[in-house]
Length: 355
Image (tube, rainbow, N blue to C red; front, side, top):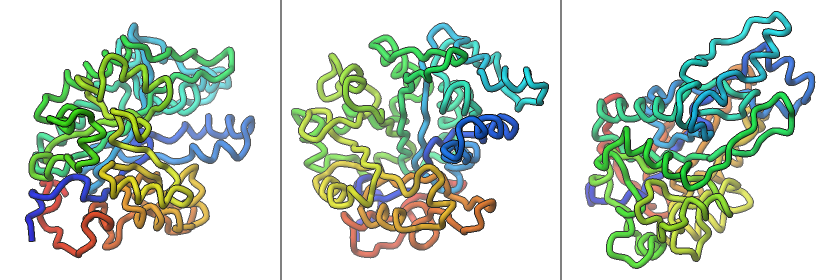
């Protein structure tokens, strides 16, 4: 049997978190917003541990959303905090000074669901680097990312800036500013001598586990014109830091976001066997946690998607359903059931010091 380090990173299946930076909406604000928006706000009623703690639990995927703020200050005074102050209610702590600094900010929904474990993207990156430096043999961590630029139609809410070439370049630059090449897995690393990135992944040219330990793989979870803008001038994502959710059949296709493991089960299995890496979701909008329904989670695991995300690596006791997401054996990492179906021992698969 080959050692773990000689196998490929796409032969591993991991659990990660969705909106990994998220803190709960301030309770007073949540009550006010729910009175206006009704039960649909319940889909935002979850939160996570600090990201380094999640990694120390064994999670090997995180999701970080960013908004573009090149001058700084655009998100320093959210409407939700102003509303609480107007009503004479106390507000949760919010570091407006950090939000006044230029650069990408980490926010879920500006003005409403704006509380975060980290305020700036640089702060998030530094946390990742510090944890990785302390645990240098960890399995590669996949960081999926969304570029938030859709404004809410409300005159009291901030208008989000679009992501243009300057924004994409600054995004890549912030990653490279904090994480050196030895900490990254980039499209150039995978493409190698193949003519396109897609041909490389179809040849299963993902790095070995041994070569990928201690590294991060970033994925831009965007399609359409937004992704085309990121890839413009970078065929097969040459020179870019992030992979993208590019359509199959294009030179940039490598890492796919297929979030519905029930409806897309056969497609996920086909793409995984064809060499792509896939992210899917075990739950969404707090529905599974409230009902205790584990069928979507089981489909996600069986699909062979390399990354399965959840809002519940730990149970939320408020719901009383016992719902949490963990792989068979109660862990967050295992060999991929599609690409390595024969049972193999796991002791040296992820030997991060704090895990």
